Image 1: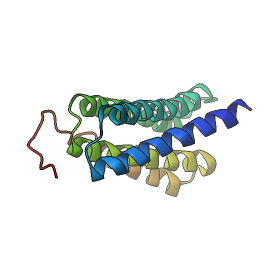
Image 2: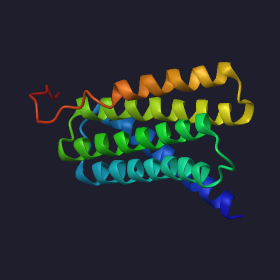
Image 3: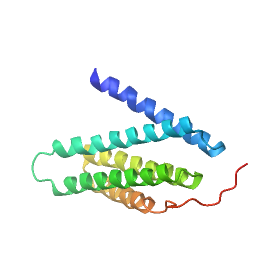
Amino acid sequence: MLELIKERKVLKDNGTFFNLLRLSLERELNEKEKSKFLESSYRNITYLEEEFKNAQENVIGNLIIYNSLIYNGITLVNDLRNGLNITKDNFIKENIKQFSAHYQTVKEYEEAFLEYRESSTNESYDKTIEKFEEAIDYSEGYTLEKTLTKTS
């Protein structure tokens, strides 16, 4: 039952995030919408972090490759949290786009990780590493100061 409730919360936060992301691309968000966007984003990051920390706690034995993939996931989540903090302090369209692309690549890494966990094949490992490298590339590229942006 708790898993079902958590799954619904995750889906609700994902829905809120993507709805507000779509709105942010159409127009500037008001303060309430910005707050909801940030809150749902922080919760989504927490869900990702829980996924990797639970995997870390459930490792049996010395699985070096598996542990390194978990560590990579935790690193990506930390990078994503740092990116959201930059976005929070400089809530401009460029950072929102950067964060959403960054978030998407971390989610793709999570999916690749889950696939590797199920199959443990060389192919799924290679895909996981490829997704990690893509996500790392998105950890930089946030705008650290306000820039002139055209508003309609």
